[in-house]
Amino acid sequence: MGLGFNIKKKIISRSIDKKKRTNVFDIDYADNYELDKDAAKEMNNSHYFVGFNFENDEMFYIRLGRRGGDYPDELWMVYRDKERNVFVEEFDHISKGGKIPAKVEAAEAGKKIKFIYDGFVYPAVKGSRGYTADKKQDKLSFKMEVEFEGGTEPFEFMQHLATETTANALAAEKLSNLKQFRYLQQVHYEQAGKVNGTVEIGGKMSPIRDYQVVRDHSFGPREWDNFDRYVWTIIVLENGAVYHTSLIRYPFLKELRAGFAIENGKTVSLLSSTSMDALPVTGSTPEAFKMQTQYTDGSKRNIECRLDFVVPYYFKGDFNVNEGFSDFTVDGVRGKGIAEFAFNKDSSRWTRR
Image 1 (cartoon, rainbow, N blue to C red):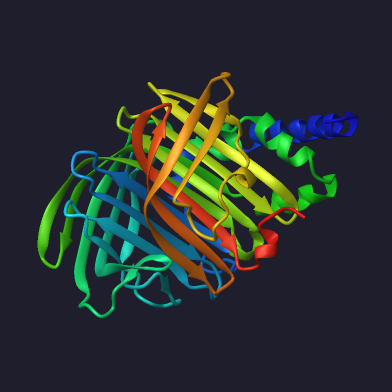
Image 2 (cartoon, rainbow, N blue to C red; image 1 turned 90 degrees about the vertical axis):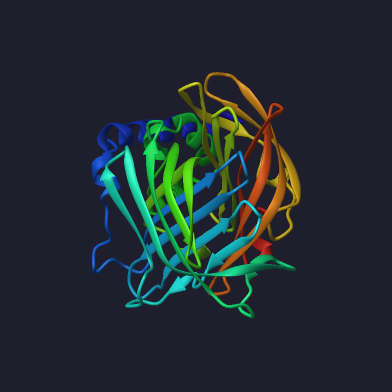
């Protein structure tokens, strides 16, 4: 890409490697992190859990996002039972001072994490944008109490993503853009494992046994309107393999790639992938798409996705996130996961100018 690119990449790589040496990831601190009471409104502390039962097609997705300042906290809950009934949270935004019917506790950092939801849900109905709460029906009491048990080491993106992956993206931009990127960096890590516990809907209790789960925790600055758009996929295969790929676009950065593959107990970092510009752009999660990923060990994977159902979320009308519960294959092996496609309301920002 030219001498200028290579010089910038070398400078940026040195900067990234220095930060990795001086900012060592501390799982005990991270898993017990809480926002300060006087945290600025752009600060965020988000826990995600997504789990699948391959035997009867049950699944759930939970996100608890605590926000600083006067921003409302964010709570997403989607659960599908074995009869394929979909339920969604009563409120996806909770104003400051309101009761939050969910909490996350680190029983043993990096190994055992408890999640409790004790509130209400609505049966979901399919509309033009996907599944949303059917408030013509009565809401139902909903209690989920599960414990996540880690089966892999956490993958923290600043510490464990290949330096080359990030440097390639940043070197294609002006060096002056690095300041904005550094400001927006978060602590962000993911971990695969299993959960066990119970779910109770309208007084009827059912066990949750050995769901395959990926958890995601991030904290630091997040303003949704900073994104032009992004694609986030997490895939769990029937054989236990796990894949993550993120494609992120900011006004100052055309496309940041991040991700990993976990196979047979070995974790490798994403090196490159199909661009988001090669994927369908629909303003939501597309019905189907294909992508190829390459990893630092030289291996490649061919990924195919077919949407099962989608749940949309909105942020002050400025940004929308679409949780696409999806069926995947990776080199022909079946799996399930999330294809999250998110868009700024300004569609002119979706394609790099």
